[in-house]
Length: 203
Image 1 (tube, rainbow, N blue to C red):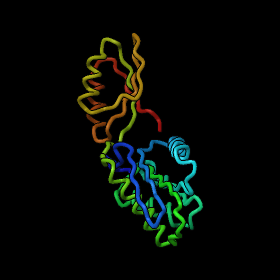
Image 2 (spheres, rainbow, N blue to C red):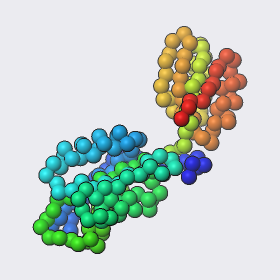
Image 3 (cartoon, rainbow, N blue to C red):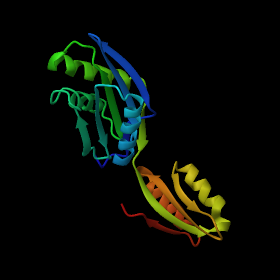
Image 4 (tube, rainbow, N blue to C red):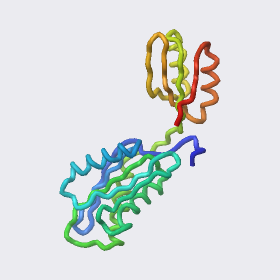
């Protein structure tokens, strides 16, 4: 998967609700950048629903999709986290988190019923947000003279690069994220500008 130029994720967060025999399932979807951010999101949802019986979730992170986690949070093994992840995967999403909160309604649903409920809640939740294709990017450090800011900014805009951080003094440092399929063009154009230094950022 790492040789792709684009990956698919969710544009923004969303929420949806599903009821089955008295139990209420509330789903949340979030774009996700890191495992640290996941912990924050889960804590926020737990604060919002402190009396819920279960807070089940699944996420898939990273461009290779190899970083993932599921939790049944006390539900029978395989009945919640896996069905949620299945819905993320069926849409080919990465950098995506889905949390489904359950309020128990007094009637046991059984494992097949739970699988269906968590799967349905995840599906409905994913339908509340747009799916977007984002470019796979590589970061470069660009060092240049302040007089060249205009030229550099035009280039950044022209090739849909993203400014990650910048220090603007007499001599400027700018870290830019360049879409993978434009790296050769951008490097060539930047190196054509006099006295500009370009170096890839590790990682």
